[in-house]
Image 1: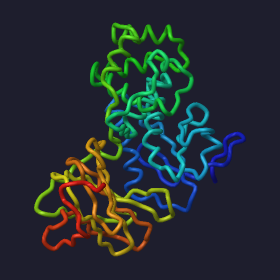
Image 2 (image 1 turned 135 degrees about the horizontal axis):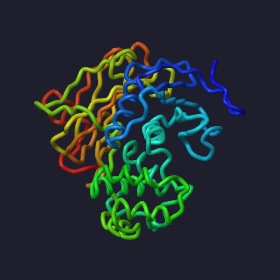
Image 3 (image 1 turned 60 degrees about the horizontal axis):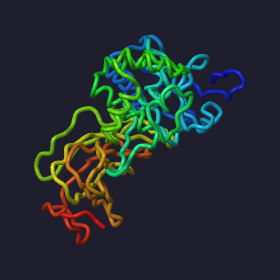
Image 4 (image 1 turned 120 degrees about the vertical axis):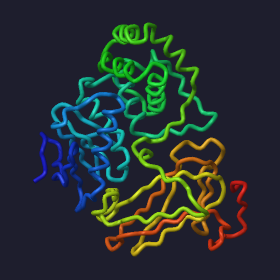
Length: 356
């Protein structure tokens, strides 16, 4: 029986309990083995990064819904504290769970419900990725205009995340935690000023001036791009991947009753065209994304004629195998430069320059 709260719609039953997180989803789902582990690890990551702790016995409730509007109103996903104390995430945008879990962990710690701009900054810095183009600029808003507000525009979320990163890098995590614990939601600007003076020994305007000098920051999503990274050895990189729902690395994606994915990180040493292929005992698809923000043109361009992928910059990339096929239990993932003996070159593609 799903939970009923007031006049709100009935919530789904909880499908699985992790060590820190309980998840309920509106579908006939099987929460694959890695799903709750990934959510639990993210909770621990947030606590460790901020040096805070939410009571371990205080279960974090997450509900994956077809329609979050009755709970979240005009935003896609949300965390509601107090009488509900749960996170609500739409099934067609499941990755927003990383952002919302940050809110829930912070709000349930000694920090509590901090200033809205700082709250969105914490969630963005620890649960999102922001990849501005090299010539992008922040919206024309100063810290004085952004702090102490009851609401923050979505367009200001990247600036909030960058500000959190700036404070950690310039003043340290302890200073950040002291600040977000000092400024409470709804505080007047006079209180915000007192908090800045106490933490930074200077004014909001002066810290804003320092922050304005750093410009837009490139920020990958730490929820997806952390963990062990494979080093490239030999001419091709290969990996055997277990796809069954009970495999330790299989994460349910909430997009379909049997939808799941397994991801791995690899350090790619050279730019150029690569052949990305997956062979499975069922229907499966491979994709790749950088764990950084591309700075020199298109980072990844898939050739429409096949599996050729342009990798414009070296560094850590995330390779993902997805499937909705219940019969798929394992796959072989291969990434190799085009032209390597035994690989098929898909047309006259230059290996030294990206496509136009």
